[in-house]
Length: 228
Image (cartoon, rainbow, N blue to C red; front, side):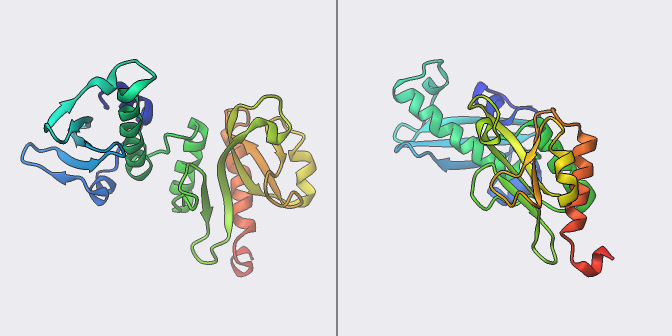
């Protein structure tokens, strides 16, 4: 459970990894909670976070006074308090990306796909661009078999400029024309369109079909000896 509107917005519903929290810098205190303190990008302010008993909380401290600063939690969307709130939110997002069981910036279907890859193939996502876009690659040959990213719908030839999560899979060239006839599946964005497809991850395509395309992409990018 997370407490506070900023925390609820960033974390949503998921689970923290205590192991990852500790690696991030959270330390066990005498109160039985794990604590982490960091400076905010706004000079003179720090954030203190606490996790324990399935609760996550946080607060902002005004360093000179060593007192809690609560004005940032007001509903205003302008002014200094708003800037402090945005700086605090950025720290929450860093913790979420490093320590949460799902990526809060991605869709529910994207997160289910990430969990499925971990469970079936024992492969974790990599974030080479330090944003929500992530890749999955084989441990032995480093070849990619999936790329999850957030792009504007218009880049797929769809109407509108809304951001949408997609995944790129490798596909058999003979199957691509049939696959791209299915709503939500397109010729690959930003990759070779003869060998890759892009699948929208907004519940438009069923998980079963997504996992089937994932399996093909995974096996087609294995070393040839392992494919035999």
